[in-house]
Image 1 (tube, rainbow over the protein chains, first blue to last red):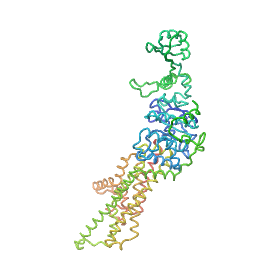
Image 2 (image 1 turned 180 degrees about the vertical axis):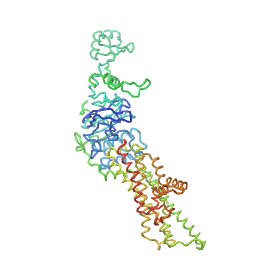
Image 3 (image 1 turned 30 degrees about the horizontal axis):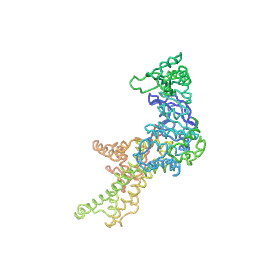
Image 4 (image 1 turned 30 degrees about the vertical axis):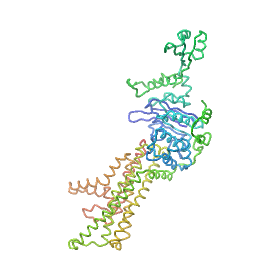
Length: 320
Length: 317
């Protein structure tokens, strides 16, 4: 369990984290989402006791990091894959960490096997690939069999197989009843991993809700339709709350009707359907809408100077 | 997606980890009470981890090895120059130069023979600096802090590990160097005049100075967080300040404040510590007694390590 209360961090005149409060509950994956520079990493660093909050507090399993008598058994973190000494081997890195708690050699062997880094464990970290570094980081995080896990952008730079491995690992850790707190700037990644979302923008919490709520709140379902009688069908479907967007002669998108209704109407008018696909990208859209005003570094256009409060007001229903 | 179905799917998936079930031995951990792993953080354990870090790094061994070569090499040079000095003395048949007593010669041998100490000290100091600055340089400090979040405990364990390393390596260096000197003295027939107490004093003070230099270096590393910066500052402590004050002394006709600074600067205290003869109290003699030197050096250590530790408590990692 991770609890942040009015957590604030300022660097000079810059406020990186601004009065942030949330709870990451045990037994589920809490996604920590936000554009680059939103304050995700700073929040995680404060949770680990690396950075000191300017104001407020963040606790792990009810205590600040320094108050735990066996920190490795409380929380494991992968804050960045490079937090190792390149001159040591992977096994030595784990042994050093284990030594601080008197954790035995067998547990070190266990996590090496668990993360599938067997042969690489005896090689110097300097020669590790990004993926192997990530595995070593996760092995270190699991060393104390902790109740809470913190991962900062764990799939950054991983190949597809590595991404899948991390995703499965994260899901399983939560299924075992652990608190899993995982950051990403990609909604698509979170959509596949997280149960609950905390969305951050410009250091402020823009949303704190189950991922399903965000999906529901994201508004109308869209359906992709491909038909050789596209124009006939579009005529039949047109209504007050329905938006139709033609893509080409045979393809168009429907907003405001679900696939079932579109299919039935097609049968009514005798239109031949080639494709009928519900589109799920709306989650990405609602995330973009949510963080639109909170993006700090935007390419091209000038940086939007809209207060986060306005962004929250513009957010879909159910978002605070 | 419920947790149960995820677990089921995971178990039947092609994931290549036979030990997935071993992630947790218990059902629903919410605190360390349910962690299947045993163990708790303590100072001796943190210390063991810090010693392991120093031991597994190649640079520690390289630097210590080079320090040994330098130290013994300097001893060899000093003994060669002793031979040259003797032949000059004998050549001039003792007319212009008074013949030194055997006890005095022995003392000279011990002092000049361990002269490589300052250079070996820099190398040992580098071990002390790298032990801490590499944590910041490589980012491994973040892993270290996840296991030992208490800054005070971490710094104490690090400093103690560095002191132990300096004590062990320093002992090897001083004993090796002294053994060479004694073997040479035996060959010259001087061993009979050797004062056991003086030999012990030479060994102990040289050994102590190694530990002091290494701890100072480690403190500088913690303060500056940069390997290069800390090494440069250490060199200033050991050499540069001494030279600068020497120049200043000449410029000011040996003004009182320059004399004061020259007496209490780190390098002079270190020289005083390992000096076997008592201070003469004359103007050109800046040395202080062994006891005073130890107190002065401890003050220098405190002046660096206390601010370093306080800042380390406050700063973000």
